Image 1 (cartoon, rainbow, N blue to C red):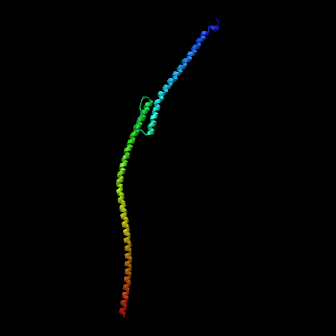
Image 2: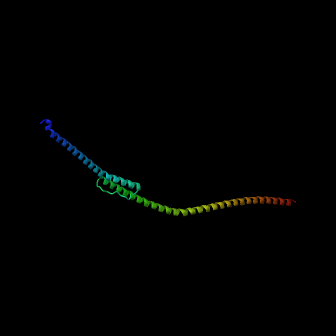
Image 3: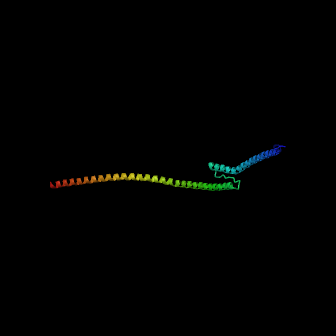
Length: 173
């Protein structure tokens, strides 16, 4: 037998081993890709759910919603911390609403007090204007009376002077 014929079963065996190895490597590669895909989904799905829930809460201002904690890993810790933040925000919102109602109540009380005071001030201002107008009229009348009295005094003085002159003329005659 020649050498080529003698090593023919070995070459076939090598070829079969090579093909089998390639198949095994291919199957292992596919299994690895599949397992990697599953692992990636298991890792990223909770993060995506967390992100979607947080976005929904933020867009709709639903501070009463909470994130469901399904894992005890970092994502679960993040969800728990975010839920705590939402609890504090909701508490602050409740306090702000209560404070806002208190301010509205006090403002209503202040308005209830201010309106009558304002009406009283307007009424008093009108009365002051009336008194000022009357005082101005009286002042004008007093001024007119004073002028008339001054004119009467001057006329009386002139009349006295005329009477004195007439009497002096009579006594001279």
